[in-house]
Length: 257
Image: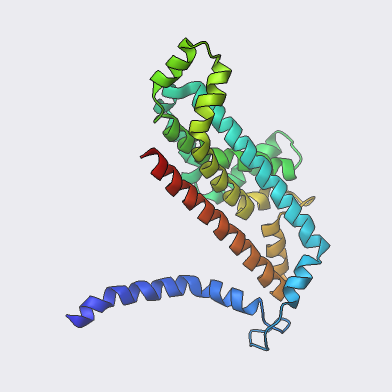
């Protein structure tokens, strides 16, 4: 009985340890004072110093921020327009926006590549922004639609009866009500776009690079401690965004319950 009592927690601990052990190793060896070595040679911060002084890395980071920022803004804007413009009619085919999440990303990436090639659109950052925008709609539309469905229609009708224009009603009533969902959907879309590799790999061409593509290119010629440091910073940034997303969800739940 004692063995059966502790076997399941032990298996869960071992499973999580197996999943997170590579991340722990990555973090530890980002402070290792050795080039291309998997043996510990002492603590150092020089790889982080090289990282912050690398113009190439700052360039690809700028590309990733541009792609993530533009695609997030477009997915939120288009998602809000679709949700508010269609309202109840969206219930019939809202499941369509889940398709990009359900389809394997490799299939989406090849599909985007064929689409841009068919229309002879040059590959680059604009094509990645378009692809990530469509992917972001899979997060923004369901979240905004679920949030808007909780808004009492009598509030909107009362606003109209009191002389407010549709634009004033949207700005002063609908938009504040949608703000928690906009923040949540924006964070999700930003994280997915910033960390994406496959779509960026197929849609950037050879003219530009994003941060995941740069890491992949450097790993192919050998794992550098600078890449470890860069990966740790990306991990920290992603974790912070996830924590922000979780805090927004909990706060909005507490406020409106």
